[in-house]
Structure formats: structure tokens, C-alpha cells
Image (cartoon, rainbow, N blue to C red; front, side, top):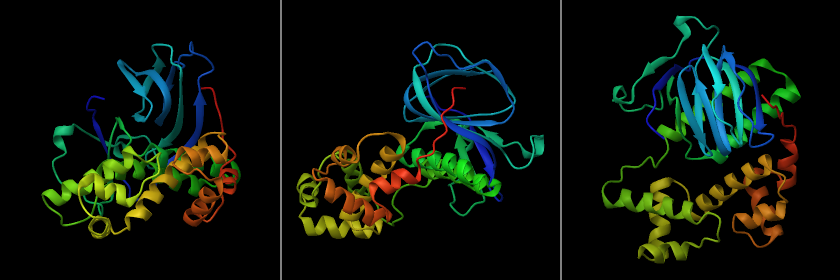
Length: 295
């Protein structure tokens, strides 16, 4: 995806949530409605391709990508779109006047290091999500909370958490270490290798052999670099994917486990409960109330 403008939001107070849902195109001929957008819309793509425009800017959004569309604008579909996506409408602070509008920056203007302690976040208006599974769970959670509790403050903090998660994935992910040179490369290579094989069984001995080190060295190295044991990191990554599959599909629990490298449903359930405190079925049921809208 081409570089897009970057929005700078102050986050000393939460965004205001309006509403959210999951959309599934009824058929391949569906096109997004034509309307005047009066609040911000976050779109998170999970399947297919969405052809949507804001004023004269035509966008092509694909699975794993997101867009933040700013008001006011004329929003419309310009081609049929066979797709599925989550969406959420929100307001920045308490109003839509110029004082509360986010600052628009060009990518070339973002030169200063991103500081996790700043009370602001930078969000490209369009981009790819490194961890779509984490965003999927949060998007499902905000729908579930809105339906169950109708608590304005909770909804506001939930939409703020989603936007901060996107910011964190884009700017704050990675090891917090003093590693340099070849050690940094080895760490990132291990992360990439795990991501590449995350749907398979992964043994530490196989990772060590792949990179030409013994198992003890790789285990110690990764723990120092990330703060987590290698086995724990692998399990956490697998369970993040499992959580997204459980809340975003009706795939049988046993199939979810199989898809992330478990060949025994009991072992998968035990591992899942160890990480989340719930069985896979309990976790799925806790997010069962999803709002599906055809916009």
C-alpha cells in the first residue's frame, strides 16, 4: 500500500465511541453506500477487497489492512466489493471543530523518534496491520461490551485501546534491548521464522538447528533479548491467533487447535486455558454477541 498521510491524535483523554459492527458483503455485486460521513470511521479488513472513496480519493483495501476515514467527506463505493470487514465510528475528543481535529502530517514530516511516554499517537490513514488477530479480538470485544453493558465510558476506552493498539503495532513493536549488529539481526530472524511456521509444530531445537546454534544458546539469547522464554513466546503467538479464530468464526475448537499446530484437542484446550484462564469454548462464548450490519 502506498504511503498515506499520518494523523496525530492527543490521547490525554479517550476518543468518543459512536457505534461499531462487522460487515459481510451479501454477494459479489455489493457496493458501499453513498453518504456524508460526519464522524471518523475505522475500517479493518479481514477478507476480500473493498473499493471505497472519500471525496475524490479512491482507495483499495485488502485483507490485513486498515483505513481511518476523516470527516466531513462524501463516502461511497466506486466498484463492487466482495469483502468482510470490521468498522467503528468515533469522534476525536468532544467535538468536530478545528481545535479538536487531528494534525495531518506527511510521512516525511515524522522525523522525531516515537516515544511510548508521549500523550499522543501517530496513525497513518491507511496501512497494513502486523497483528490483525489482536485487532480482530478487540473489535469483537467492543461490539460485545456495547451490546451487554451500554456503558459510554467503557466504550470510549475500548475504541481508544483499539487505536492505541494499531499505533503500538506500527511504531512500538520489537525488542526493547541494547542489542546491536548481528544480534539484532538474529533476534528479528527468529521472530520472522516463528511467524513463518506459526501454524506448525515448532521445537526450540529446530529453531536452533535452522540458525546454526545449539539449543541452550538460542534459549538464553532469546530470553535476554525479549524478556520471555522462547517456548512461552511461541505459545503466546499461537494463542493470539487462536483467540482471533474463536471470536471471528464458527470453526470447531478442535480445528482451531489443529490450525495452529496442535494434533490433540485436549492439549490445545489445556494450553489455551493456561494462557487465558478460560477454555476455548468459554472464551468463544464470552464474545458471542456480535453485531452484524449491512451498511
